Length: 93
Image (cartoon, rainbow, N blue to C red):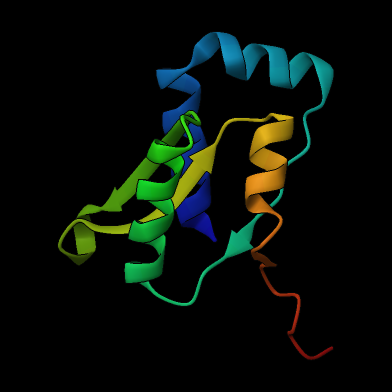
């Protein structure tokens, strides 16, 4: 999950005004999951096709694999993300 923090930090620097508005009006974070890096790459392409702002994070310690994506806070993004599972949702208690 630490990868998501890297993606959020990158998003803040890439889209400072969007991040500022989010921080002042909502400040909610949701961490979602996909099963594989390939699936995450497909999400990245679909975000581009949907014209949503996002910031991918590639982990340098594992051959620059795509490990996380931060997505703009918007109703359009909320609808887009509704198909994904929450991280740790199925984890045993």
